[in-house]
Image: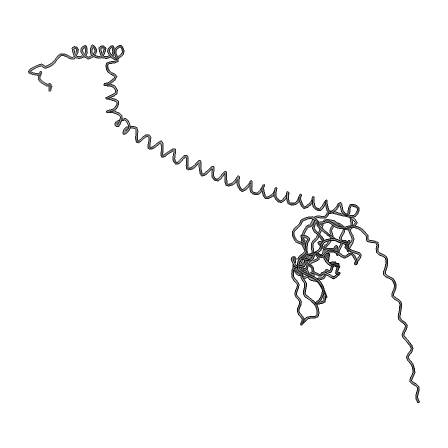
Length: 299
């Protein structure tokens, strides 16, 4: 069997003596530190020396924690941004709805103010859709013969004349706007009282006065209202404002255009004046009897 030979010389104390010495030294250090605080300076110096080692040892764990926190924060921020963006869209839709309701309520209040002017003979109707023919200016409303609507009734809004009922169904009615080419409204100039006929041009934003002499006193900005001589539109309803006057000696009549006052293509509710205007009948024209021709006498 292999074995190490005993040392030739033994150096130092035995292990038991070393243990006793270390134990005594430890107890002495504990008592001196607890009672007299002799080791505070040594402890602080050791802490300063070992601090960089502690930071270096803790750096990997701290770096991993910060990287994980960075990705978690980025993911949370993306989710929060997505939620906020969706909430902004929803709030925008609700805000648009509230704005539309506010505009509709304001329009209805203005219609009610106009309705008080004709309290006994008005019907509030809602515009359902426009006419199918692109070359006409017509709308369809949700009131018909069941609501005592008849053809020929004037249709207005809070600003002025919109058009005239031209066709009636049991629960619907067709309204021809004043901008239609086949529609004509007798009007009167508020400034000087001149009467004329205002017709549509097929454009929602333009009307034209028909057969106006070159010397007729019409100017830009003149307000045109219904004259009431046709027995359909009541007198004094705003219709249009003169926007352009052209006089050319090469033509027999002046070209005078205006802009409609009413929202002919911008509102969802209109007011139908459902009343009969009692106008005396026209007097019968006397038939002219032909005069007898004188016979020529021969000389």
